[in-house]
Length: 338
Image 1: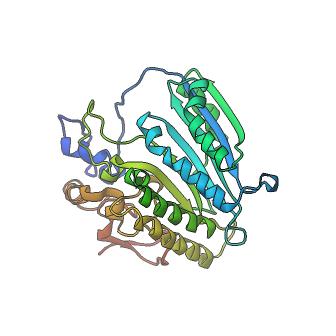
Image 2: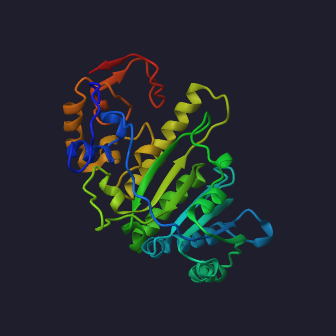
Image 3: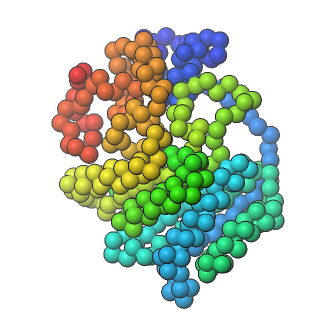
């Protein structure tokens, strides 16, 4: 704890701290030195990877055909999530110069406890829709693995799994189920995503099962928007190596403006704290939702002097860092109480 004590936090001891640590930012309240977690039985995994694109001239895939195919792909999200599947995908366009050149890369569609044949059959209706739209599916690869460990190492090799860097940072949005089950809202969501990608943004997203698990105690500080999430999407506006502060500032401001379009079609939703934008407007609502007042109360109780600080952590609004540029918060300055 900030006062140097070691404490145990669980359902029976320091239960308020236990509630806060799970979702409210672990290092906001203290340093977690050890944790007990649950293990699950080993199970087989099937994966599928493929891509569709407008960038192969011989395939004659127009931008309108491509985005119709992307909508068909998004329409499968409720069914996938309800089955416990997980889809990790990217959509990248070539920006304002060639906005019609876009690619959707799925890597992978992940299904626990399934065989490759079962996963192929699961995707047959979607592939039929692609065919009806005149969309060739490229680089189709089905794989089977005896366990999650082997599947993960094959799918996400450590050498390829970087995060952050000197030419990029991300913003994110948790799109709720209703954005995919309500056809009118899905069309608006798709239009908002398309606009920012054609303008130069790059998206990486996950279709994933969330919700409430009645088998365990989920009374915790996890962002309530997570329970309704069906697609977690990250957006970036990268720059070239060695840019000026002005370039980074301009790109970062543009990222916030692009995300305003995503926020507009998902009002009241939120963003994932660990892969969110340091410039996220109203970060208290976006990262913590209606848990924030209680989290702030606990912050004052356990860390009244602000020993633990981060830019968008609970209680950070009580402080400011000197010498900061708008949209370029380096935090290289003096930390002062407001």
